[in-house]
Length: 322
Length: 278
Image 1 (cartoon, rainbow over the protein chains, first blue to last red):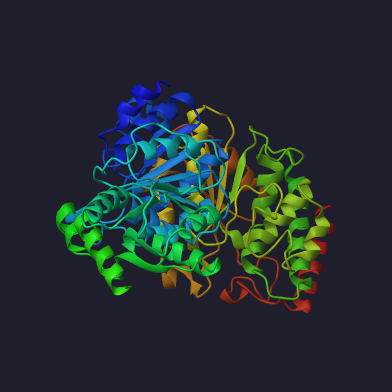
Image 2: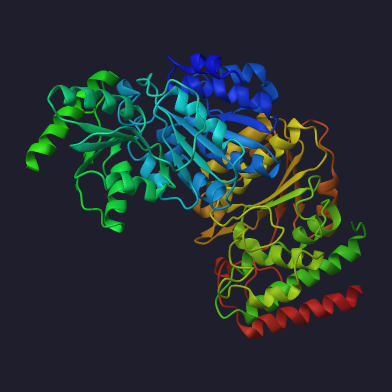
């Protein structure tokens, strides 16, 4: 693969558009790859795969439970299924099929969910997924990945296609701010310290990584030096690598488009407790509420998850800790 | 593969005996009723119909048998042991700590089984996915799925029923253990399924109704061709607790610690039947 061209191919795309491109490439390379959706072909960006490999594309209609059970079944025929729907439905509507049919049997199913967080803003709480990472994180053997942008999405898909066991990949609906500009080889578990800082480390996943990088630039204008860590593997985390970064800081704040209960913030706080990390810590995200509806940028602003909101939240945390 | 009906009847009697003896010897209660319904179905499927190699359970060209009603694992365990997947003596450890064989199926502990099951309404979706996967490569192996009639109350089962017809899955055969009882009593009183044959035909399935304890009828139903490119459903009318007079056709037969005297009576009857037949 031509690295430079491939990079150009993904830049400027949303993570779900990048998924649509990379799944087609993977389908080209491996005829065991099959793609499944439940009446959301265009939303999960499987049009290209469907056109290219019509016999390996399966639309289950509006029936997510059957799709997840069938995904388990495809592996009994030696296939590598990618089961794709919205994060709210894969995590909740089809949760038992995911847990019992796929994970309990330790089957190589890739559950790729778009519309993570509140990225389908106007659709409201029924279509927002703010519990999904917590739900998947609690399922034994499930690897949970939340890429920051298009290039990381492609890197993750390339990395996981041939690995056995179940995977959950949470994508957004919107075009995330670009974090990565070059193709790279994804290492499951490894955190990525995107920039170092002196005063605080901000730890983010998914679309919030780009917002947090921007927040760090705004903080610097106010004389605050913030490190930014992308934790795109929520499970299994390379705990020692994360802890060794945390140990270099006196303050840490997680940023997530997820309930602060059970998501990234919870995962990091578990590490802080288990490894006795001496650090002032705060979780920033949705504070155990159901979200309202509106355009995505308006929701980001309302819930203080845009760059400005993250910056202000960090400053409040810093001031309180003085 | 055995074609002789009497030979398969013998095997069905052995499976029924295994179920009864295991139920008697288990320290805890077992799903007596809904396993005794399966003796003939398992005997026909494993010994007369399916293409299997117990020595090579992962054989690519094997037929896939998915027991959706995972609480039928006593009958499945007996059939698989008798075909040679694992020693018959494993039945003596049924439902003991970390045992190979237990109330519900755990693929990680039970060699050769296709998939874990226990929660109802899951297996048919798995079977549909397997059948769809087989179709891609135009394989000639088949998928068999055994569901309980109670599982027809689960919405996910109907999602799978729609999908199988939509995709013309004529490589899929579903057997419904139609014993007419769930835990709380009669299916028809609690959540009526009838008219089941008409319903399934309306859903574009090929439907064959048989006496689920009649080997000859079961064999013919399994072997019947589905020229119409439809998935096949064999509605096997069974008697819950079949073979134990005190339990037959009662909701109380679902899960219990069976009385030794009831097992003795059932085993005596089986022996008499065997003497008559053999």
